[in-house]
Image (cartoon, rainbow, N blue to C red; front, side, top):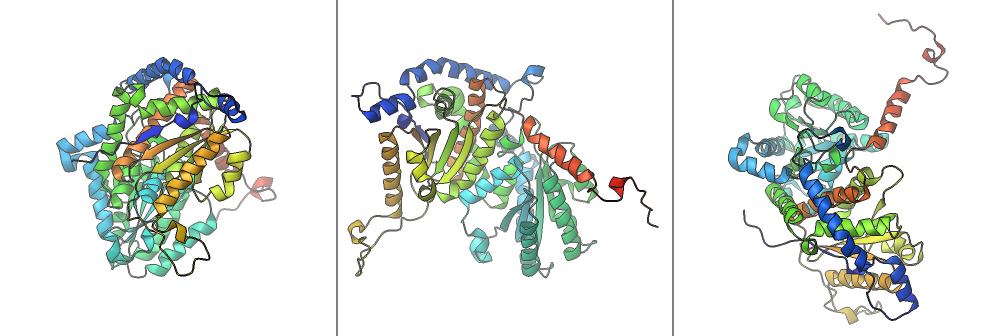
Length: 502
């Protein structure tokens, strides 16, 4: 497969303090709040050592206990999936993913993905970035065989769940018509997350009422992506779901690093996206990470600059400012990646997402004049996918926009980015630009792999194991314990016996 040269780049000059600058109040601020270029150079040897460590992690089959957990399988996964598909085609894991996606697309016009955390954030980010914002509202002929897609199971929001059930009940009345059939895919690596598991029960009950308990559609329209040997696998087998309806997330891949496993690739394939281009982009980024020097290595550069701003400049907030609404899902996915990987032992940056220029009307004032506690990483798409929309001359010029005749919305966005970066530079507030030439499967694959690799490298720089999330499991155990505890005042809480029903 031939792809255009569309490598993403990282510009961190807005984070570096000028080496020589005449004294001004602004220059004093930059010297205090920007990274000293000497520190970046001094860090480079350690960066290369971290890269060697991360690269070695891929090959460890029986790591020592102090290395555990070690979920480095995501690093080689894109290349391995592509190579296996090249050799085995339909018999490969990617081939099975394509087959299941094609079946779901042919047999249903609505697919509901159930998952929480990393099990759904990656797929949701891909959907938001690469399909129309109004995809689900398009007529079937405009969607060209791609079903409507919904994401649920990530919360215990009763009303939101009921609204989706109501939508299905209103729009789907005849299960014999493919355009009125809906399918459900549970994505749960461990199978232990309560919210998606409980939501699955709700949809199974709904499906038995809609399709009928003996309908052949019932087991064919339920599918799962899970880890090997989980209770989800056993449950779906007991439900009669055929073997080709259950895909596995390989061992050694944590949930938040699973976007290039079937957890993210099945939604992408259902959406009719170029899955191989996603994987090629990710594999290309891994190759750059392993082979390129620091001067041309966006993974090492991004990890180093974010580490220095957090660790040495003491700026705990990390803002991902996405300059396309379509990338807000990527920002939310990155929030989990950073929070669970680096938020340990009382340390770690706090990631936030803002959409520019939208959120400049809410956060711009604080970014400019508020506490000096943040780094802003701009995520920019250089060229829009669609034809630029222009401001035209108008007979009524009370809005004074005729002066901008022939300026386009991309021109407005670029002017805003330039103005924001300049205004922050002038008052000593650090920013950087992560630039995608365009928004495509290939560039998105590069971006997501780059952010995963950079987060792991940053964890190694911090001396924190970037894998595992022991703190995230505490509330889950207490939640289940709370559900098992009878409410105060109930007969069972008072020790009274309950007569069994006949």
